[in-house]
Structures are given as C-alpha cells and as structure tokens.
Image (cartoon, rainbow, N blue to C red; front, top):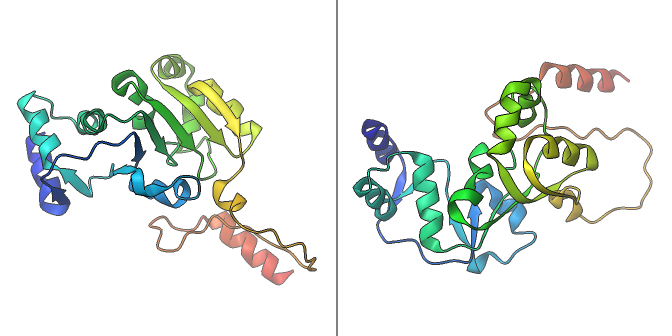
Length: 211
C-alpha cells in the first residue's frame, strides 16, 4: 500500500499547506465544466480525486492515524475543509455515494453523460444479490438527472432524492429556432478521449453519409 503511494507521489503534483476551509467542495476537477454553469467557483474548493494532486498535510496526517487508503484520504480532506456541501458531475463515481456517512455533508450530483448497464453504474442491476447491499450502503441527498428514466434507475440503486433537470451543458446553450432541412446526429464522441469510438457509431455515421 505504501509503495503505491510512493509511485503516485512521484507522478503527481503535490501541495504542503493544509487545504483551506470551504463550505462547498467540488468532488473531482473534471466537474468544473458543469458546476461552473451553476455556482461561483471563487469560493469553492476543488478536491482532485484522480491522484493528479495530493495534499501532503492530509496524507501524513492519515499515516499517523494508520489510514493508508485513498478513499480515507479523500474523506479526511473533505472533513478538514469543514464542507457543508459536496458537489460532483461525475455521477457514476461509486466513491461519492458513501460520503454522507463519513463526512456529514449534503451531497449533490449532476448527471453529465448517458448512463448504461454495460460497464457502467447501472450494471449492478444485473446482480440482485449485490444490489440490495449496494443500495443499503449508498446515499446521495440530491441527484439531478437528464430524464425520468434515469431517475427511476438511480432510485433502484441509491437512496436519496432524484430531480429531473436535463443536461446542464445543453441547457446553457442558446436555442436556435431557425429551421434547417437535413439530419442532425448528436454523437458521444469526445476529442482527446482515450476510448475508441464504438464500431456501431462508425457504421451509423457511414450510413448517414451514404444517405
């Protein structure tokens, strides 16, 4: 476990000073794009959860208490900031679901992408025996989703209140009422994304091109 920490410290950035107190903490830096559409980020602390930056003050404090897990580090960071609200747009991050029990703060997530049952959070629905224990141990105060269907699925796996709000990013764009003839295809493609474009999407685009 300690060797893993050493490897992480050699690769990531790190800070020495204790994290500043903040009533609101953003869980995962990748949430900024969406959260910035709703909140003023000047008074919000960002917790980087992908090991790209480590706070050595919190890390060493945990070592003294014989706490070596990364989830324990994330929890200790939040507790030290005395956050009252924890927000994320990485709604399929399982580590976020059990923060309420340890951090005593209100947790909120905003859905940021399509959620599926294959290699994603709703895959747990295929395993009834694991599902019961999963839902029992996970809670999110407020879950803002794209649609009612997604809300219903989240209600099956996580305790908490769901609210349909649509896509924050889409809602922030101005609507054009000019009518244009043709076909519009909304792709899940992301530039600089490590995963390859799904073969079915490639075939669909090729078919649309021929049409």
